[in-house]
Image (cartoon, rainbow, N blue to C red; front, side):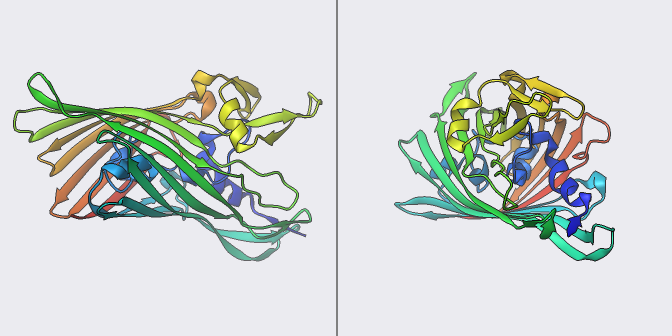
Length: 375
């Protein structure tokens, strides 16, 4: 009988211990990593902006308002505080077809490094690599000049380990996730003799069956997330050279585990069905916080992002933001900084995450994104 080092599960799940879903951690939480440096530099806000290729993640309805083709690549060394061999890559491309609209596709890859396989005596039996990957297509459709809907479908593959543990075979898990989204963009209007616009949107992402890694284990739910938000953009001068955008996103994990069994000393939980959870995850839930079971209210389950972006002549941008999760529901709190450059068809975006908690695993996370825009 073989066993696997605890490190495998630490590197697989500690980065996302801040996105716990009702008692346990959802499967494949890498799907929640915000992929592009622009939105992450604005405090993880993007559902109401969604004006580039990364709309596939934030709000696929935003594709309906795009009339260009793009390629967008993001890379980040993940959890730099751990000095581990972890990295995250996100490649997305969009293609505009006259009369049809803009179609997008993406590949997301999280490398979890090389792990050691041992037997029950601690004898090393070899090494293996752990990783997670997803790939999918998205499409946005205009209902009117101001309103669009969008959808996306992705295949998810998670290879955390192989071999046997306690007589059970460990296999890669797989699933599919569906996105449903909408976006409203107002016509330009004047505020203090300056052009302004307002947008609002929502995205319900990763709707799908859970993932199972062993034959007898229950399925762990996907990180189904409801995200809603608004953005307000305004010119700072009469010629539109200087613009500023304020954005706010509110999100919530829609997965839910429910308690089964009558033993109060040894409670057992199993995942709710995905569609059942969409309607029954609006109340409080119980969660183990490391020392005891605590109840997390609906208000405490909400995650908030606030962002600010300044552009000069669509060539140079400065960004900042703030992100907050309640301590009983993830305990992520950080300030973000970012910058962007555009020249001809090329763009570069940079973001930096400053955590407000000492020794936080996400401290000093840097993302770098490259963008090629084919008009």
